[in-house]
Amino acid sequence: MLVGSGTIACDCLNEIVRYVNGSNIHVMEIVESSLSFLKEQCKKNSVEYIPCLRENILEHFMRYTKEGEILIISANNEYIFPAELVKQENVTIINFHYSLLPAYRGVNIPTWVIYNEEKYTGVTWHYATDQIDHGKIIAQKEIEITESTTAFDIVRKGMKIGNILFVDFIKELLNGEKMGYDVEYSVDSKLFRKSILPQGGVLDLTDTAHNIQKLLRAYDYHGSNVIPPLKTKIKDQLWQVVRYEIREQKDTELPEMDFMENDLIVNKDGGKIHIVLRKV
Image (cartoon, rainbow, N blue to C red):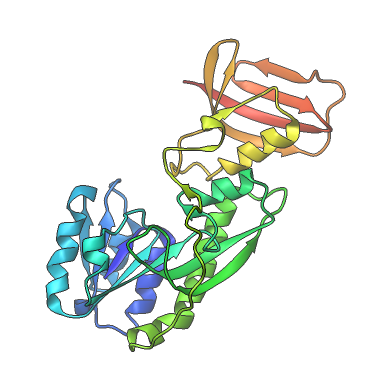
């Protein structure tokens, strides 16, 4: 079974059908939009596609656990597998995660690693347990973070690397080979939750240019709705960040901050940031 969405879920499916007959593969996706590339990929490969709501996805899983040994592959999926499913003896679950576990468990990790000014992050395939983002590591690889890296860059690179790693181990896993190694998960390790975002999702224009740029990059998912758009306040009016452009050189002819209609220029600390805004 495959549960997830996006490019990496499609890539995983394309690899699985090389070794497993399409009639023995079931794909589940939590439906949040009418457009699904995964649905099209299932149709192309003659694989059952099951659109689910969050509240009834467990019901679908439990139905298939009665059919013998089940491998569940979680790729770009935010559904938290409950203990009643994970602890079943005939169920094995592997999960794709956007960090180098055991560090950075939880969600929105590309945002947090940029905000925390990490030099590296990465991706991990691991066995799932009844704890979030815990379990033996199957494979992982680093991703470098530079001064220009955005959250979208990490997601895009992560999906490519995740698929490469998956191709390397999936045949052996399907053949029943034991793999993976233990890592130490600290009891008090931080779990990043969806409801908590850096600076509460608000851009402080009095901050340094470095910190403004960092927050813009941390929230930049190339227009997708992974997290709510960054907001800022100007003269008691709340604005939403639509797009931005960062330039290295400060414009000596402009003031530190210039705002006209929906265009904001932040011009300080040796750099210039052009931000296009929309009223909230």
